[in-house]
Length: 393
Length: 84
Image 1: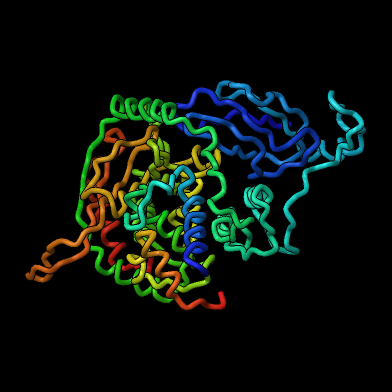
Image 2: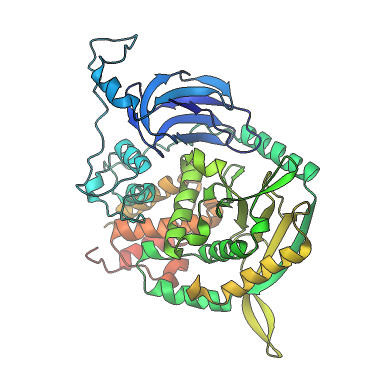
């Protein structure tokens, strides 16, 4: 028997409101399934389960606000499951005549094709036929990104003269988001002795490689420079593991993998930095797809609990409408944040001559309780070095 | 596609990327990135959707021509439609 609890989605979350259950007692769940939606200061978050088994008990009803750590539901282990199935259906206080096995009609699954749970659910919501989708997941599975891409691409259902009603970002309250940012950043500035470094990186080789790569790719497979910056950062962190992890109770805890929080600004105010897990191990096209998916979900829909619980470091890129450089604030309890300014063409000295080059200022803010400036400089140097050989990223 | 159909298609795509946007306030000549506060990632999602919906190829070098509603409509109108 396992407890499914209210997760801590970020260091400063104290409570969350359960707004939707996607399972009922008797439903079988497996690791990674989204089973509930919780409203937090960061908006509505899809909460995944980390146990396998059968939902035996829903403890907290919807529209209830509970502290982090509260048991929301209980999941019976595998061993309990067959016995349970043999027993009469779990007594449901409401409507006994209702047959227990009446799940909502699932989205049609393509025979043999894998579909991620979130993708299946979203497809059902949007009325998209999964059989029409080509999976781009690691193992050919249909991912949420595929479903979202199909949703954007599909023709309007009716010949409406105007776009359909605008989906509101669920449970998003800019004032609450501002409070969450205020709490996290005030704590960071109060507790973390930041040191800052920056370095200018020549992106000529990276952008030339990207341009020729993109020219040969269909539109959906094209990449942005941000994917290269993130990958180079993740690979450099692999060399400098003291900058990847958390500082909790007076000690540094190395991250179990490089789970890079990708900072995404929200229109209407606010910022989230959901994690891209194992960013150092993903091929560039997959990393790019993950970034596109995250950005779109962060700005229009829902993020998942695992994405907010797990970042071991944050990477932020100001994009093409940004500024030259950023002196960023560490998101506690992380120990470093890597920032990239806008990429701009500027004079640069190459072999004694001044040339126009596309440059970016990479910066690092790191926790002096855990590392020193020398190590930080090595990290920035490594990022610069890795970006000179883009084909190897 | 007629100009009206293209305009509706573009409005629909942008509505998916920027749900809170009010396109009625955006003029034909305005830079969509400024008017809707969209970044390069949103813009790429826009180009991808335009490519899939209109069935046209869009080389990267042409992206600047899609920055305004007027430009995007003209681009779709003149582009040779591919069989997907």
